[in-house]
Image (tube, one colour):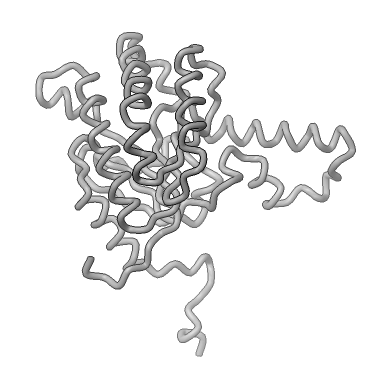
Length: 242
């Protein structure tokens, strides 16, 4: 990398463009999703190589249930097959897998596969791979509000004690830092209900490349861009205070 390394602890990716990639080639949309698995492999490898600690992938949103039933079914099959196929390699690389989102809507088969990969990789420490599945940031915030209200009702918490820390600790992502860098492929420039609270001070990167074409080099290019950013978190550089 040409820029002095300033590696983000947490990178989050909205993996956009699988369907368009397939349609551009006259293929069914599920072919794009299958090819997208290759990009996941490449990005996980690149994240481990570059010392990223947390990698969150927006794999399936609550809104995705509205897609054609055949596509949803294919996505679930790809997910289960990938869990079986990828677990040994993830363990070899030192990758721990965790899921965020509401898993209750998934079939028993999918839930069992998710529990299996979380259990099988639970002791790995190089990288935490977070899969956002049946995830909605607004639903996450509603859930956090309900949890806090329940604590107040039980007398464990006073309303005035609800602060940003309390909200953050009630989110699915309570175990990890907020993302330093959010990448969305395919050139679209929106969050699409992804990590709305957590993205308050994230840096954003919107490459034109569709997700199935996203390579290790593309990931490292995003890290270069991040390294060149000046993150002030609402403050002013000390040297400019004159």
